[in-house]
Each structure stands twice: as C-alpha cells, then as structure tokens.
Image 1 (cartoon, one colour):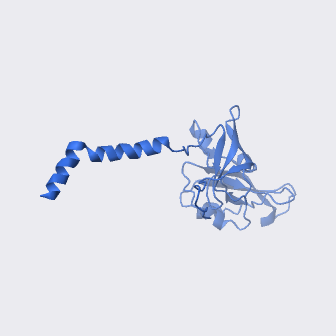
Image 2 (cartoon, rainbow, N blue to C red):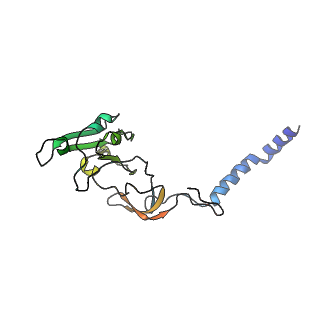
Image 3 (cartoon, helix red, strand yellow):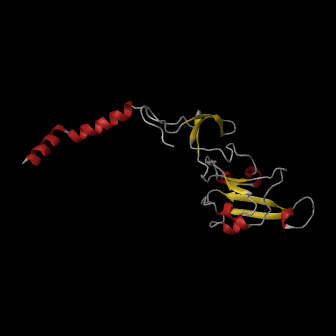
Length: 195
C-alpha cells in the first residue's frame, strides 16, 4: 500500500522530471571546461600518444632513415612506401642509403606503432601531432619533406596539459606556446590534487 502511494505521488508531482531539471541546473551554473580551441588554447597529448609520423635526423643533420624498408614490412595496412637510393657520397652500404621516396597514407594508417618498433635506427616516430584534418585526399599522403619537419611539441615534453595557442589562419596551423600552461583538471577548493 505504501509503495502504491509513493508511486502515485511521484507520478503526480513529476519528481523524476524535477530531479533531472536540478541536474541540468547544477551543470548550467557550474564553471565551463570547454576549450577555446584552436584560437586561444590547445591540449598537448601525453608522451605515449601516437599521432602523426615524423622522420628524424642525427646531430649532424643527416637523415637517420637508411631505407631498409623494415617499416614497410611491419605495417599491417601497407600504408608506407619507401624507395631507397644511394646518397651523394657514392659509397655502397646500408649506412650510405637514404630514402628517395618515403611517404605514408594517413587514411590507411592504424597508428599502431609497428613501424616505430621495426625501425633499427629510430628514424620514424609517431609524434603527438593530432591535427590531421585536410580538405582533399592529397592532404592525407605525407611525403618525406613534410615528415622531416620539426614537431612543434618537443618529444620529451610531459603533456596532458592545456597550453595557450595561436591559430595561424594563413598557414592553417596551430602554434602552441608551451610555457603558458594550465592544469587540465584543476583541484577543487578543500581537496588535494592527485597526481
């Protein structure tokens, strides 16, 4: 009998509806956590994030890639194309080879990291670049020259933070200002921040 009275009161007074509205009102009045992306701030992924491919150079400025094609063999989707050639010195040997063509099709890539694991010289790395949008299919194929450019986020930067950023409309790129950070989830007053 008591259960029937509670059910009738709940249905007549729309208590469930009022509880839902209170939740909505609570979030309406709370502080927003929406990012002002890309014009004012951007998120820097953690170090373990696997994003855009990058080719690296050694301290002398020479490409680390020796065009051994192990990354091509390890790739489960065949999205990497490598064509080897001899370098300018004319010597023959595996260390004297460079890639004439090194391109990756970002649409086919799984971002699994097998190419990183297979590379004996650590030439290919998946960086933390996650802004891979483009307007046509030609933008999804990255060639050697584009892959050799420096990443705006250093490889050993901690990540997991929101930084100030500047959106450059002419170049359609975002330039993060890594020295201007703010915490992703700020601690609430009266609580200690967990790290």
